[in-house]
Image (cartoon, rainbow, N blue to C red; front, side, top):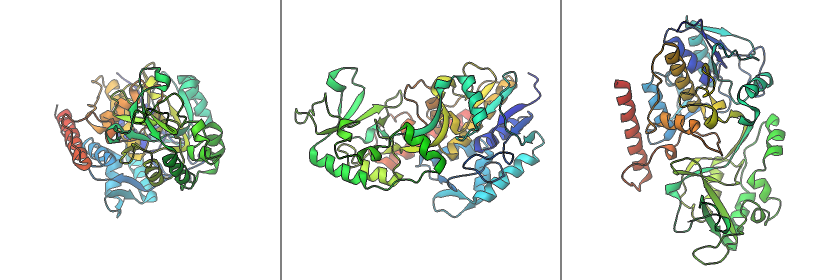
Amino acid sequence: MKIEHVNVIGGGLAGCEAAYQIAKRGIKVKLYEMKPVKFSAAHSNENLAEIVCSNSFKSNLLTNACGLLKEELRMLDSLLIKIADENSVPAGQALAVDREIFAQKVTEKMKENPNIEIVKEEVTKINLDEFNIVATGPLTSDSLFEEISKLIGNKELHFYDAAAPIIEKDSIDMSIAFIGDRYGKGEADYINLPMNKEEYEKFWNELVNAEIVELHEFEKREIFEGCMPVEVMAKRGIDTLRYGPLKPVGFDDPRTGRRPYALVQLRQDNKEGTIYNMVGFQTNLKFGEQKRVFSMIPGLENAEFAKYGVMHRNTFINSSKLLDATFKMKEQEKIYFAGQITGVEGYVESVASGLIAGINISNQILEKEKMIFSNDTMIGALCEYISTANEKFQPMNANFGILPKLSERIKDKQERYRKLAEKSIEKLKKKLEN
């Protein structure tokens, strides 16, 4: 298939990784970046691949899900992880970089690549007759936002990310929790965590006094008009949650045979049933506070959080309906998406999505087979998560909860994660050998 170039829209982490993967396969790329012509509310650096919130790419340990994902990306020749490794700064077991130097080095690599042309302008129209990767990040400009809305349908594009924590099912104490729906109706889709009066009041007291994350000014109005954080709701009165998301009506605690004083519900979040979402627990608490306070809920004392709750400005599409496992639109032959707009959450996850989209749009052009990874690998599990039908789709980061369970039950968490990582690396090695 002869084409002039691929348009990569967005010069962030995902866009730069995608551009590199396409260019290394001998295909020309036009990499569009609206800076310095126009800046988003959170960006100030004129370089590509600007890191906004942190200088850390998280842990390098293979027993950490993000550490495993980075190792997979190294095996797949990720340019951005290579640059991060080469320009790392001391941070213990984490991979951290100097933000300015990292962005500068990525920009240099893009500029010196003969197959990449950097175009400094805002894209407001997507040409469906050309190959495109839309990698515009969580702060997509208003004009392009409208264009994407037309492309995918307004109902499939979300303005912000107000997500509740997600918990690994194996870490829930099922001697306390019970499965069932309100009044016994439905198909027993929920795990229920009953609380007595003393347990609830202790939990409420810690919740209303817990530390929160400070939002950017541009996020505050938009988020709080659309979704009430559980800690804000709790501050309206000690019984507010009991008449809201913790309403116990329609349930009996199997341990007592009586209605609990309050009840927390967990809803299945993936098709395998390995991770569960805390219903109604959208929160702006700091991650450490979420672990501390939510672990006070009976049955969650030893909970492993696959993902903490977040509330921040984040444009994302309903990828579970719109994209396949290569990040290509199901209804458009030449349009791919990458980055946080797809519902992958985190810097490393964004790089991974750019790598997958870049490889697969190249393979399509070169008339090669799609590159799809086993869901036993972290990168494959992320691809599966974003492309599998999910009525309650929310952004997801790398975590061991989205990997299929091991055939053997291993109680020790670190040993279990080590085994999952070994299996993932082995699967990826075999894939690359074929």
